[in-house]
Amino acid sequence: MRIGIVCPYAWDVPGGVQFHIRDLAEHLIRQGHEVSVLAPADDDTPLPPYVVSAGRAVPVPYNGSVARLNFGFLSAARTRRWLHDGTFDVVHIHEPTSPSLGLLTCWAAQGPIVATFHTSNPRSRAMIAAYPILQAALEKISARIAVSEYARRTLVEHLGGDAVVIPNGVDVDFFARAEPRPEWQGGTIGFIGRIDEPRKGLPVLMKALPKILAERPDTRLLVAGRGDEEEAVASLPKEMRGRVEFLGMVSDEDKARLLASVDVYVAPNTGGESFGIILVEAMSAGAPVLASDLDAFAQVLDQGTAGELFANEDADALAGAALRLLADPERRTELSERGSKHVRRFDWSTVGADILSVYETVTQGAAAVATDERTGLRARFGLAGAERRAARD
Amino acid sequence: MTVTLIWIAVALFAIGLYLSWTAGRLDRLHARIDAARAALDAQLLRRASVAQELATSGVLDPAASIVLCEAAHAARQAEEEHREVAESELSQALRAVFSEPGQVAVVREAPGGEDATEELAQAVRRVPMARRFHNDAVRAARALRRHRTVRWFRLAGHAPFPLAFEMDDEPPVALADRANA
Image (cartoon, rainbow over all chains, first blue to last red):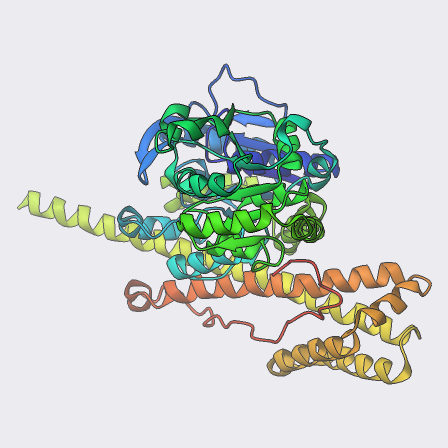
């Protein structure tokens, strides 16, 4: 099958959506499909052979933070050319509501379009204003995928219609194979995520840490992720700061080894999560997981059976649950075993097959993807009729 | 005077453009419904065929065979207005027959059973998928057709008002135990 995938965010900036698209594309290529990914990227960025650059992404303040997005005349032209040259059987757009390549592709294409909704943003004022325009583009999507039941609910509430739920994929075996590192073992708590992003919840964990250290002074907290380290420990008493180790940005291998080493992996995120891929990765590596009780996290952890949950933003609850887990090796083994079994459903072999089922369902009884000539002015008055007929033959 | 005339012409042109654009949208939505309906029909037919194949293959016990064969046959032969009911009954029959993982294991062990089970599992997972996509298209078309402009200018022409396909498509747990919904 010839598959075109559209990435809305800059390829060279690490992010959940980008990683998902990279893994999906590589999985599909291994299965013998022809895949092309259209992504924003600087012209001098080294790209894998299956990625086509749609031009430089422009930093724009959007939705509360600065996002690097692609829009405008040039990107639209490149999108159109990519669609035209690709002659795809199906186009898979990611995050179609962000004003970037996904929306441009929706605008320019006709035929089977699949779209995955990753985040579940509350309806913004800009989106209400843009609703009529957005609706006309979103109407072209033949199949919607939501990454979790929670994401599906918000999607239904905001845009109407329905979606199938297919979770994000993880290479479970890659994490399951990871060897623990001795220096990261022995009474360790793990945290992976942006340090300076409060929604990732490190401040909550820092608030809980004195309580944990009071009872178990040997505990160490290992933090992997970008951000200002000094600012992160500023709230801690001076003598406790030594118990926090910052590993900075870690490679995928080290991330897997870190997860395989820690006694408890803590995900104190306070919101804005629609899936929780890191929890799946932690469970794959066999780490007992303790996470805040966000809707999305509760779903990934099977309502608390595959990992423990604590009341969101409640540092005392976090400290209590962490202490209970650290003191109970049996419970940790039990969680680890249950987690390893539970994550099988998030493995790429399952997720990839489900996504392919969606592709096959929408391509059945439909023509291949083509550029949408109807948006052309001439076509609207029948002037381009001959051209269109020729293109169809 | 001429200025007014020019403005009127511009306004008429803009209205015409908008109407033509809306008609294009509606046309596209109708095409999407047709494609989604074709895909749904194909999945339903596939499911009924595999079910019938299993029912007549002799791997199931006679009672289960008769129940499944009956339901699959009815689903395939159903007239358009009874289709939703017949397909729902096939879902119920499948759930009744494959209610236990043991039954699935028995079928898997039979010669050729591995392929048949895989095919049936795929079919019962894809029917709800195809139905969701179809009903999503129907909802979008209905939303647009309720719009004033579309009603006043009769942009939908003679196309019938699209109807959702409502049925019970809950797959048997033993066949679809992967997290798929």
